[in-house]
Image (tube, rainbow, N blue to C red; front, side):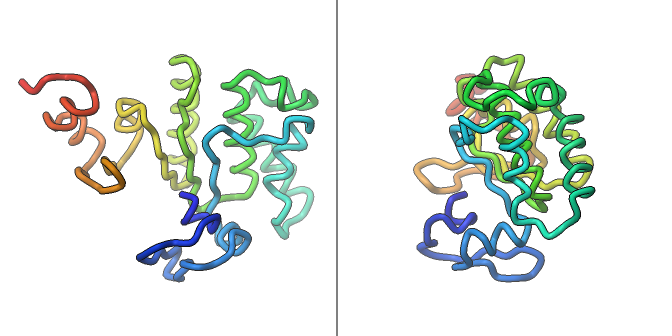
Length: 195
């Protein structure tokens, strides 16, 4: 994800968005092509309010304030808790609320591709369910999502297409339901013995 985002150089290969080779582009250029990275650990601006953090996600967009306000309202609709906490410092939010704010900040960039690193890290199962429901709704509305997630069950339940990596190499690929049913994946990653 960091290579796709332009934060570190690629060692091999290329990646494209809408037919354009983005390999080697700067992080700002990649963001301008609609690729947004929600990093592991959320990386919010702790002293800034929730709303200020969300608005930072739209800083590079060349659209009207009305468009920004419409998108902000959409984020608040997706994550109602953020509307309640809009003036609160981001550092004082719970872990789940911080994750909502980080995703909301990404959405404020109007992404074509929203990349999320470790959605469930440190969160309760109930909060993960809420986030998964929100991501599912965003995907139905047209946002493509690339999720890197160590909670295999959550990831495979959510995805259309999955890739299982081991030591940096793709070892399995298929739909989420195919991989959930794969005895090797079940044994190695879910702790379920093959039947």
